[in-house]
Amino acid sequence: MFDTLSDRLAATFKNLRGKGRLSEADIDATAREIRIALLEADVALPAVRAFIARIKERASGAEVSAALNPAQQVIKIVNEELISILGGETRRLRYAKTGPTVIMLAGLQGAGKTTLAGKLAKWLKDQKHTPLLVACDLQRPNAVTQLGVMAERAGVAIYAPEPGNGVGDPVKVARDSIEYAKTKQYDVVIVDTAGRLGIDAEMMQQAADIRAAVNPDEVLFVVDAMVGQDAVTTAQAFLDGVDFTGVVLSKLDGDARGGAALSVAHITGRQIMFASNGEKLDDFDAFHPDRMASRILGMGDVLSLIEQAEKTFSQEEAAKVHAKLASKGGKEFGLGDFLAQLEQVSKMGSITKLLGMLPGMAQMRDQINNIDDKDVARVGAIIKSMTQAERDDPKLINGSRRARIARGSGVHVSEVSSLVERFFEARKMMSAMAGGKGMPGMPGMPGMGGGASRKPKQQKAAKGRRQSGNPLKRQQEAQQAAQKKDETAAQPGGAFGLGPGQGPSDFELPKEFKDLL
Image 1 (cartoon, rainbow, N blue to C red):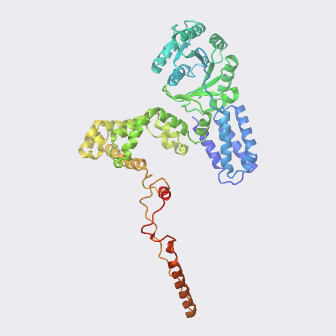
Image 2: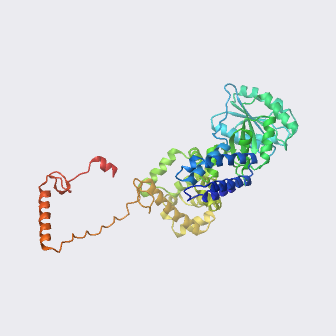
Image 3: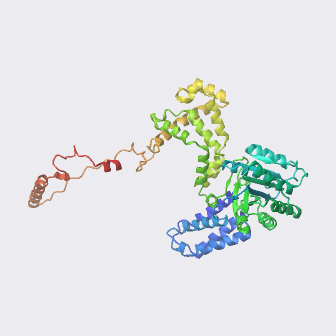
């Protein structure tokens, strides 16, 4: 979503690099480029003006003029101001002290409220809560049915006494759902309200009546992240009519420019709490302003990547894989183990999205976008067409076996050969890393391994000392050298300062030095 904005900001910062000092003209030019980038990203004009004013004020101050690297300091300022405009700190849900916590969803029709209700319920269930979905959208055709499907997929309960399609009183359903939740011991109630095509006074009043009936702990305004400048007008109307407490961004995986995300929090003063970035129920998480700012500036989002990995990967399985790679040169690690690891990675989501979270990947966006997630399925089909013996020991796979595997998986023989060859290379590298030897072929680094194959530098033979051409002086130098040699031999440590019987052959380093080496 933020690709265009990221590219423009990256080009702006590139012009600052290498400058030891920033002039007023440099700061003005940078501010102008950032302003254009934000306006092109459909950020609301009041938000842009406030953002640029803060950057110019701070960039002209002492923190940049006194910095060793002014360009890096400006990037730091932009990053901090982006975090600020996105809402500052991460905002958490407020739960009720007694009784069920009531969360009401509001927003325009088509913003994705019903789908988001299912995602929020699944997220709360994963957080060890017992949510109840309440169908109060009785206007839109099949809205109640859709919410029922979402509840079934999320594995949560639903309260839908009315069939919908224009039949039933949504305010009464909302009021009755609270008593139902108390009776059935549900600790969170998610009320899905009817959307509206625009700023509809009648529908806005209905939302206000539902709010008054259930007295929610949180009112979440669901905004389509693909809506541009109009998001601010809509958000302001909902703020006046319903007075929401937080914002949820839907469709964050779209190809729009992301202006809504940078505008709503600043204009309304309500923070973005959640973001939905895909069609699956799991494509939903808490919104972290610092991580989003980091992504916009092309610095990646390693923390979110780690959190996704922790949810997906089992520590026991990881320990088993590490043990197989570390022993016997990694020969115990077979293609079956490799397939299991690939399947674990694919559970984390799209490979393209995962790579996009790594720092510095903005420069490789075109190559990353060309990655096809179906390649993982193709590799899986090839490995599953092998016998167990072939998976455990890929060296068994000769020409006739490759032809059989290719027929079984519907690929060309060359693809099977390529997979086996790449597997051996990958296993060799992973085994070296698991054994603490570092990356094969990489120069040795202290504590990182990988330097054992490096040959020691041959020292040049020391040149003999030049002798004087004067015979008397030469004789005097010879006498001084002999005298010095006798004095050294007479000392109790010898030439190396060691005690008697401690020559180089039987000298032993202290334990601390051995450990260090």
